[in-house]
Length: 497
Image 1 (tube, rainbow, N blue to C red):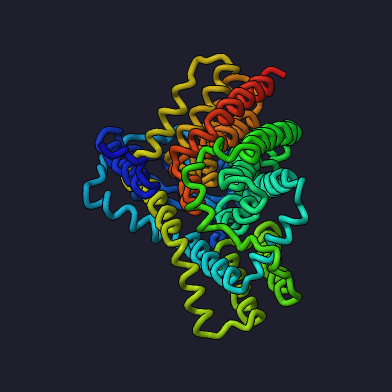
Image 2: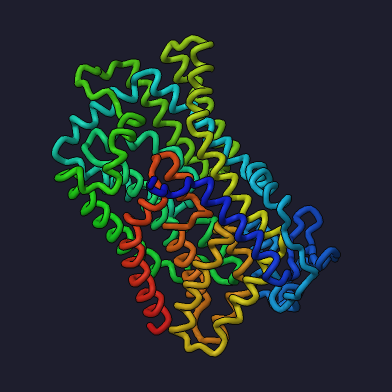
């Protein structure tokens, strides 16, 4: 009898999409009215079903709609997406998604996610060019020699830096670029591929989960809740430090165990396959020439420029992708790669990440089915009514898990914030604690589920490393349990202290 294999990431997502399509036949369709600010006309546009009306962009308009948000949050661009208007939910005519729409959803998702897909493909091309020059191999061999006996520093450094990126500007999708670069380094340090996967993904996950100044979660959610984003900041910083420490200790324990006995690796049966795919030339004869050092400098600067642009210049995917394309061309020139060879190598590198790009598109297709089936607002409405009558400690923890559940269907942090905060934040007033607790429940709930959320980034990350979702679950679930208990304690303390 053949051993049953765990399905691929693409198949898992298609199964989830089919389940969501089925839910559109079961869950009643519903809609909240929405309010959007029109900068050109300096007015609000209220959308009710298929009709729209123009309203004055004043504080009085917001108060009349029970929206407790300062008007300047709209006029200065802090809130740029339409927000849900409280107490306007109503059931509408059902729009169940058919078999045809189910099969169309991955295509629509790929089109919607084309910006990040092109970023992934261009990064793949850059990695292909880097590997061709040999600078990558030589640099990794040099690093392995330099860190000999102190390889654990790599784990602490990578996890911490990526967490800092996550907490400050939402470093998440961009981490896709780091896997092909860092995995060979960790393999050269005698770790398995699960260690760099954990250092990168868990670093990003804990950083974005406990965002401090991240404009795509903390600031937009606080704005939509009608509070200053600095409210509750001290508590989030403390939570970040403790949460990050827990993650680092967890990774180090696993890494040391694997280093002492490689058979303890969760992915030991894939060791040869992964090393063949990511491994470098281990010969110490590889010399880091001046040309190679310059190539590595250009390569590193690509990421420095990307991070600076995203955090300081309001760059997004077009600008980020352009940086990596220009970097590829410069490296090709410095490496004296012939034009024909450059194009062939670049295309081959991009094709290596095509599977990852498809996973991103299929995952976006799940959200397409939810929105087209008109069940997102219904789930939000019922989630907001579940907590009625609870004491404030139980209420806060219930909100934590409600946000975790909602994030399966709405993995976007900014999308979740503008959709839910105008509805959820006022509930804090009725229970008797600050609205910053709701913002924290949103962040922590979204962040905790992101560790395993198949509609988020994890499946795309696993596809790059060539690790199965089942093996990731085996690795991360004990950590997730620890962090969940820790987060519940934190939320409860914030309510009562």
